[in-house]
Image (cartoon, rainbow, N blue to C red; front, side):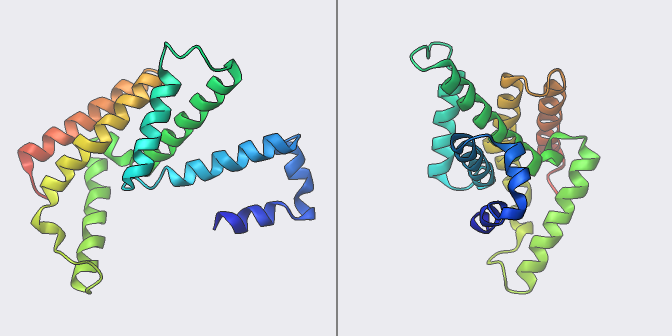
Length: 178
């Protein structure tokens, strides 16, 4: 858990590490918040968290938002970009060549199918797998790839990630099976 990790970090034997990471209490709090936000960013199904991230993104990249301090604006933008990088790392295979994506998607399918067979999942994933993947691309992967392109964090590679996501989505439409 995060609490245990921070308790460990605060032990005396890690004082040099803490000194290298943050020079004051404010930096420690900022670091802690960044770690918590990054972990929470992996929860992509919580509608409330998703809406909070969407609002932070809007504030961070709103060109007309001149009311806040430069420091606050930079911190907000850095935090939301890191959250989206964490999300992208969680689903990076979806924004790569079809063969790579399919390899990892098949593994996920088999894991979910085994869970179904053993009674740990309520439904057979084969029933709507292709439809679910298309919905996942439309509702999550493609919007995420567009945001990564918008913020420029991957430079020209952002186009490649978005193009692979779009191509993989199209492939599901034409092939439609695992």
